[in-house]
Length: 279
Image (tube, rainbow, N blue to C red; front, side):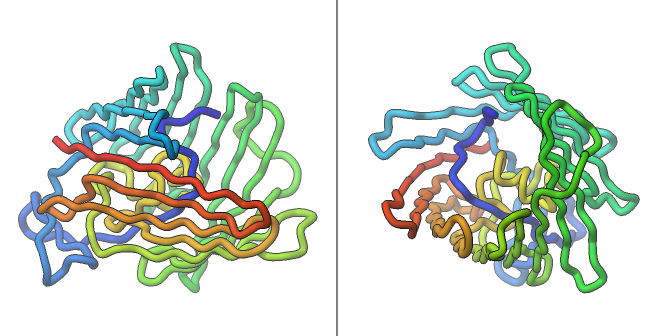
């Protein structure tokens, strides 16, 4: 399945914001008492170089209606079109050179929390479905179903089950088990105290409860913070993701450098650099 971002393994969820009386200013938990945040900032363009030699670049242009994301266009011929229901993103359709390749469907509860994420891979005639349960101890349980065919309802048992832990509302730990695998894979996350380039897009915070969506589209961003480190331990993968950022005067990233290192025998190191441009 083709996406508009690199597929380096980087994960994040969301951080809440507390509104000030001025609609153009937010005081996020990471910035409260430090710097008022300009919430009118919207990312306009990103350029990602995905190889060590700098030969593979993906330039993406973001188009808005107000603060709602309408579409993302890539110089590689990939386009994603966003559909809203009210202020919630309900569907994303992705095409490659005019041919539909992917469809994503989002369902929410009465509190605007994500309940189900359906990812239909039209290229490979397969569907991944994720169901979210919000527990009384502030953890989130996610069941992942993998099926052949283009479906809207899962069949069979969940392929993978995750428990997600939070510090405040920031994802800090994931424990996941898979069918047929006795070991539990654990992922731990760390963040900066700056601003996420995508934090002001309408409906994006609700989707941050889907790590799967973040992996594909957002490449390691939280609701208002940016991931700086991920450590994955367990079977079958052991790897570390580190991200360093350069920021502008509003504390939004202007560039990031991502390095993924595998600790497995013969494991490789991969890097990518992304530049961010704002309206």
